[in-house]
Amino acid sequence: YYSYLYAKCFAATIWQKVFNDEPLSLSAGSILRTKFLQYGGSRDPSEMLNDFLGNGIMRNTNGGSVPNVCSLRKELN
Image 1: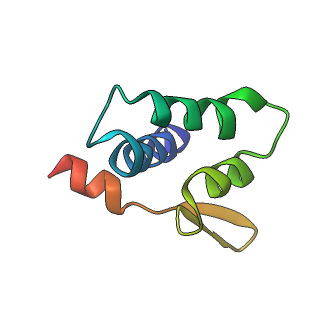
Image 2: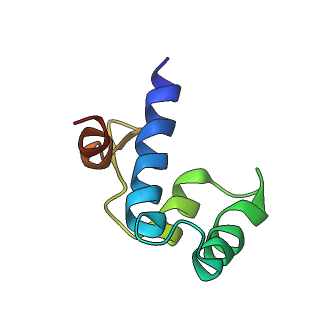
């Protein structure tokens, strides 16, 4: 269940930061493909998220990663 919530946090952040203003933007889709999707499972997900969205998408605590929940909270309100 928690991995589902993490994925929702990341998806909400990607949507709000990249696609919210222009969902069908070719340049935004190309950035998503080249910085995130093209690696599949060959690269660490936290590295890809930080490369794609910059720092602040998650923080590391006690050996684990915690996503930024601001975008998900905004989406749910």
